Length: 124
Image (cartoon, rainbow, N blue to C red; front, side, top):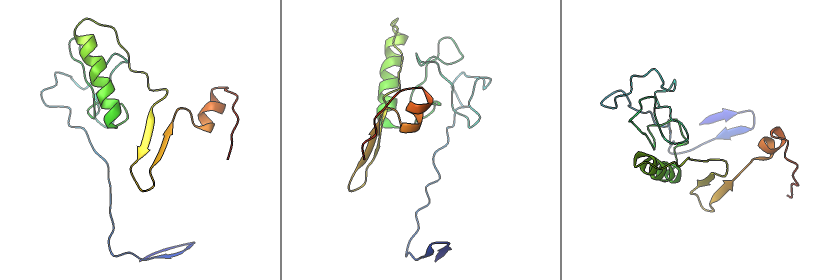
């Protein structure tokens, strides 16, 4: 039982989701000088790490941990490893919560649009 200012909540089970942590010290060739405080590998928009010939994509990086971000980042990393010039742009990144009903967002939030000086119309 959990008592809050709004009343009591009773449940038979509790799910605690604590997130994920990267293990980036072993075998990456990255020396940690350019690592995110939580241990993620910091990359540029072309998926390049601080080590010239090493690229990174997916959950080991400082990018949002969504499968579609990892897939897009991996594609850009492969293009760049083979001499191309591709960048990952997350300005219109979708976010999905797989519940019933599903909930999804894409693009700017109202606060982000205001912050960036974008005039918008909000319909509710």
